[in-house]
Image (tube, rainbow, N blue to C red; front, top):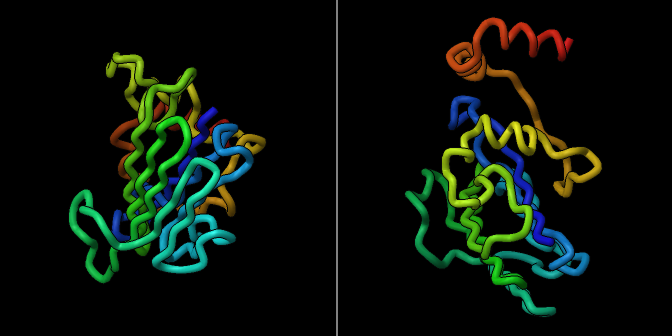
Length: 184
């Protein structure tokens, strides 16, 4: 089994809207190991017991991780950031590349379709129509169950004016009232 989880948090640079903040790769295919990467601000380094600094690498047990500044970035290097890239070459032909910036991550995942695969990127059944945010939330929910959470730490949740604007634009007053009723 391949398990990949991510945490999304608002930043001042995204006006409080969510950006990838942390990712973890684990599951039976990793034979008890987990590789976690957070933003540079978070201090979460990939496999700190095996990679002791930047740059660094680890190879063994059928997988490898490199942590360096090589490779092409997906867009531009954010102002005031140094390029730091974590490349994971894992069993089952799973490849994960994480561009680690000060306050967010860019993530690229390449892997063959897995049985029961579903999540924020969709279910890979060839039907993009059921990969909408609403469809994914209906299938897997908005949050990972606490008993299944692989990420260290806890999410920092801060309600921002931008979130309020987005909620008003995307949710009817009836839906907002129902949600408020469940939370209070």
